[in-house]
Structure formats: C-alpha cells, structure tokens
Image 1 (cartoon, one colour):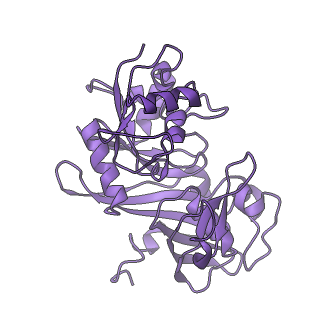
Image 2: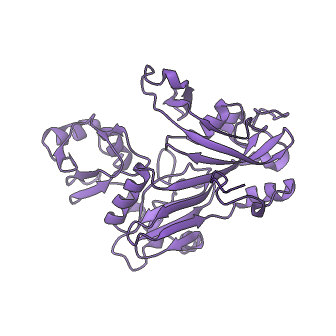
Image 3: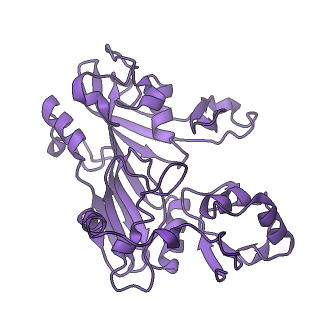
Length: 343
C-alpha cells in the first residue's frame, strides 16, 4: 500500500475533472475506485469533500489516500536514472537554488509519461534531487517537441507558490517561433477560444470568440504576438506570449490565423509546402523537419525570496541553425518586444 499523499494541481492542469486529473497521475486506478474514494470522502480537495466530476484549479491541494499495490503512481518506479541520464539532466539545468530548478528542455523528449512514453523528464527527476529528501516536481508542462524553459519546484510549498503565480498571471513567458508567412499586422492579439477535437489524437480546434460560451467544452484563450524579423513573405520570426495557458494554444492560434509554426505536422501539415504568405509547415530542406517553437524567457518574482528572476534559454541546435541560415541575430531584438520601451 502507498501512503497518504498531498498533490498540488499544476499551473497547466486547472479546470479539468478531478477523476481525469487523478487518472493521469495514477493510470492504474480505475474509474470505479476513484468514485468510491470520493464517496467515502477519502479524496479531498483543499480539505473538503469532492466528487469525481469536481473541477480542480491550479494551486489546489488534493489528498490521495493509500492505494493498493499496483495502483501506486508510476513516478516512483521511474526514479532510477542511468549515469547518462544523470549527465543529460544536469547538463540542461539553467538555474538552481534551494527552492526551484529551471531546465532548458530539449525538443523530442516528453515532460511526463503517457501512452507509449517510457522515458520522460518527470521520471528522470531523481537526477536533480541532490541534497533534497525527494526529487523536484513539475509545476507546468511543455509539448514533447517544444524546447525551452521548464520549471521544477524542490518542495511542496514552492510548487504551490509557483502554481499560484501562474494562475494569477504574475509570470511572464515569451516564446520564440518561426511561422509560415508574415502575420499582419506585425503585432497583435489572438482571441480564438479552443476546444478539444474529436478522435484519438489530442488536437485543439479554434472557436470564434463570440461562440466560446455556446460551444460545449470550449475555453477562452488569448495570445499576444509580435513579428521580430521576416524572410520576405516566406517566414517570420515571432515572439509569442500565452496570456492564457491552454493545451497547444500557441500552435493552434498561429495555425488559425494562417501562419502555422514551421515543422508543426499536427497544425501546419507536415506535407504542406509553404510557398509564401502563410500556411504550410514545409519551408524546405532540414528547416521543416523539427518544430520551431521555443520557450525563450520567463520572468517572475522568486516564490520564496521575492527577488525578480529573469531566465533565458538558448535556442536548440535545429533552431540555431535556422537562425544562422536566415541571418537572424538574437542581439538585434529586445528581450521583451512587447514592452513600451522596446522600440
């Protein structure tokens, strides 16, 4: 039997059913078990009784009672990291103190386990435990093929504080991407809502802002964008700020306005050639073969010390090669192109 656990709902995990949230963390627990534990009051949210369909919010604490062997979370079984894994994990650390760790996540590796995912950062987090009594815990996620800044909390108090900061929009995340065509105007805000598409593959469909309220399952979503450089009408280097934090938000939003992220086979069509003026994720040669989306910077108040923390992640190799090929230089653009004094 596993012991009682208190888990914190992450910044990207809010507004979903409690049973679904639990089954992602305890994949061997069946629906009937979750409903029974809820009825008995053994699963609690912020100390109160909850139903299986209760919607959890970022920062909330979920009490999970002892579970039978075989229904324990998968993470403890994945804590043994090889020497190569330890070297890899420690090589991508951007920042570390007693409370949190920031990684420059490589593209192509999943953040958490799932269907067919046997190697992921969460399962290798024991490599980053150092002097702490337990491995660090994720407080948000990135898509498998998205690179860049990923935060982990080294204790539960810090995890809750960071989740609160994300929920209250007290953090500033800026992504860099290469997109097909050149968005017009060069700076703007995308406000399409998002709803999960049907079928087995996880994909989001855009919903007109005035139809979100009447579309079952749709959620409001907002993205700010700014064009930093352009290759005529073929492609543009853009900065993206996810004001909200929906699944695949940046990728779905850019595709919806006709400028999908280069290399995005799901939202841009891996076989669709970009001939200019937008659409088509194929830019030509090796440039199209990997997703060009990178969590470039994160700015926030440190959850414990209160000091202003600004983190910047270097581009992954495939994006750095694209920048070199197109003659783009990160030094030519402001750290925050949306700031009033950026020009």
